[in-house]
Each structure stands twice: as C-alpha cells, then as structure tokens.
Length: 103
Image (cartoon, rainbow, N blue to C red; front, top):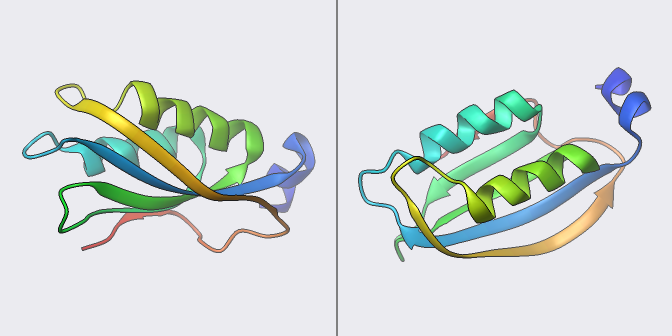
C-alpha cells in the first residue's frame, strides 16, 4: 500500500449509494470485479430500500475512476437512475485490505 501511495499521491475515501433497477443484474459482483481491476478497496451491499450502498478507498485517481463506473457503467444489464456520493475526503491510510460484498 505504501508503494501505491507514493506513485499516485493522495488517498481518497467516498461513500456511495446507487439507485437503480438491481434485481438479478449481479451489480455487486461486477462492482467487486471492477474495484479489483482498478485497485481500490472497500465494500458494497444491497439495502432493504433496493439500492446498493458501499465505501470506496484508494488513490484519488482510481477512486474517481470507480465513481465514474458506478455512475455511468455498472453491470451489463443494470439501469442506473442516480448515484449519490457523500463523505468524500482525503485519508492517510486505507481502512480495508480488499474489496468485498457485504450481506
């Protein structure tokens, strides 16, 4: 992680909530896959309200790439209505060691 930090500068953290049609579109699985590809850490889970919520941390450029993916791409058959980002901040160290799906 320290090598990651040196090469890309600041670490960022953001909370996310995705509002969309999620039933049966494997959104969490694709989110986990994309996060691993980008090299960000955190978690994602479905809520009782039918949204997907989570936390993303990592180098700021990679967090921004993940935010873009969560806003515009998503899983192949999802239709994203809106993505809300909150608690966006710079952090000194990562709180997670990987990216997981929570239940």
